[in-house]
Image 1: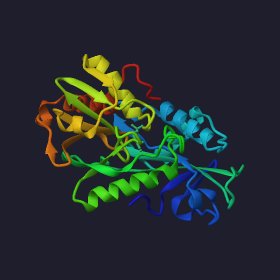
Image 2 (image 1 turned 90 degrees about the vertical axis):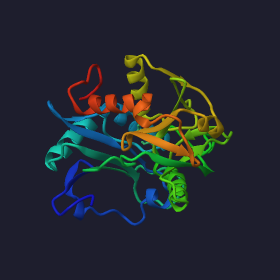
Image 3 (image 1 turned 180 degrees about the vertical axis):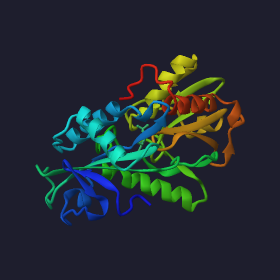
Image 4 (image 1 turned 30 degrees about the horizontal axis):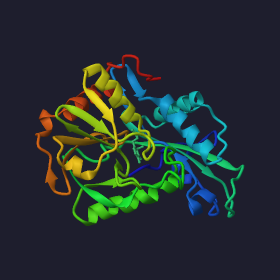
Length: 296
Ligand code: PMP
């Protein structure tokens, strides 16, 4: 699904066939989860293939790497160049790009100077699909910000996302919504959360969430559209009284939610501010409506 016999990946400055890539069984990241990664999308636009907000993604990757003591030998600009090469070599337009930085062989719990950088890409549909989602309040909390750097995209943090997603699916829901250690809504396992009430949008503040690049794009689009968007703490009970809700993320894009804990939102999705943002986001990423956005 992710690669075939001809797929090329970037690995430590070289272009290798994905099927030939080998790593040591002793890599620290595999045992203890201290890799960092990104999820980026490229879009086939009338002006050719464009990587959406490449610089922002690679700056976040470098920030995550620094927090985890992983020394990366490339700049955000170099990463962007490699990404365009990766897409070209694999003949990809609309693609999902996965940069991964991981530690080399090291069975101790201290950082290692051996750091590997891998970039791969494949065609991937919307992560949460296109149907409206039935969401449950997870019994799992997001990691406590005092236990790790929640604003960094660290591979180990995704154990929490896997548990929450699996619980939701096992209980017949499409997706989970996780609370923070204080009982306020934080985010989904792989996406940020927004709700609408009386034509105002709300989202959780930074502190317990990944600062999503799609979330930041929502702030920009709301400003352009004249929509009010407020960051504040809120509980699942407040969300249940909302008019509508949605998730945002690079993989999910803008995904409408039908219900939380089987309580349906009041508005039809087509009548919501989220649906306007969803359409605007699609235009922003895939057509020549870039404005000042940093398509590189
Ligand atoms: N929260 C989590 C936990 C995520 O994994 C993601 C996906 N990277 C997001 C939010 C959304 O971030 P972005 O919009 O930058 O993809």
